[in-house]
Amino acid sequence: MESIFDLIDEKELVDIFSKAVDIPSTNPKGNEKPMCEYVENLLKENAIDYFTVPVEDGRYDIIAKLKGKTNKDAVVFTGHMDVVPVSDDEIKRWNTPPFKSTIKDGKLYGRGSADMKSGLISAIYSMILLKRNNIIPERDIIIAATIDEENFMKGSKALYQNKVFDNAKYLIVCEPTDMKICNRQKGRTWADVCVHGMTAHGSQKGVGENAIYLAIKLIEKIKNTEFKDYPDTFWRTLAINAGVEPQVVPDRCVFTVDARLQVGHKPEHIWEKLDELIDEIKAENPHFDATYKIADMRTSWDTSKEDRLIKTIEATLKKLDIDPEFDTFTGSTDASMLIKNELIPVIIGPGDLSVVHRENEYVKLSQLFDSCRLYIDIMYGM
Image 1: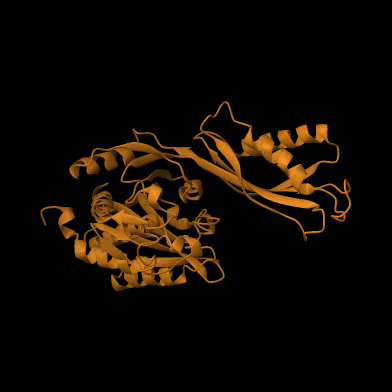
Image 2: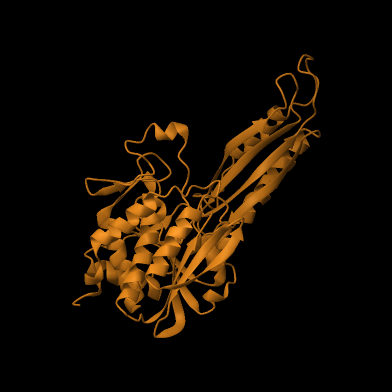
């Protein structure tokens, strides 16, 4: 073997990856089990040690481990097994069947191809190659395959303080970054806000307290409020629901507020600002009443470019004739939860975030191969 890269059989990798994309592991509503079983079979067939972590109702994470020359400062690779569903309207815009992998012009199309079965399978295949060839990595290598990343991240939350991370130090999230090094990730938080009014018969003019109109006042304030100290933070209303039936003045209006946070902006600051806006309206209208329930708070993070993990990735990319580029990941990932295990994170993987969660999702096979080369080189030599 002249190079660790020589172990990679591109045809075999594409075959394993294609079969994964063919599995409709949609979430919601938590249909990850067939994908879990597929991953388990890959690990069993290659005699890789693993265990499962129950999450809820037959849903579980999978943790695989390859022992290295030392168990100090283990490297964790993570990817989620769920994909977002395809709506009835979206499927009309697909040029290929979304749950049947299709290769065309050097790209593999299918739901989950970029987000993120390419990155996950690439990491798993890298571990398989080391095991198959009896190559002992420098340090322990761990793969955490999670469920529910596309919803409430119950999978990564279930891994908090898991003993498998006791000797781990680094975390590589295999999400689609177009092979850019995302050493920073924005935060996210959202909540359901309930504005309360008073019911009345719809035929009586001026009676009752229409919760929709009251909610509009708060929504307008949210729309026109910016965070001057954090100009890249923004929030908006993404869903709204009200009314019992057409002839009744609604006494409840519930809407969802979603906030995307600039790196360094704490999620709790969002809800402190919302409290201020609610108080402002109460001062104008004593009848106004609003409550909210926070669904989740995901903190941002920032890893130094001087960290050993980042330097290692840069060096490997240069081996692959890829000019290292840095970026901030705008979405939220399992890293938000897994860093609570005191891991140093980075996000890098095949696929472009702009083509995910929409019709005709794809990944370039060249990036699939490059990600496998990157991951196996890190596993082997870091």
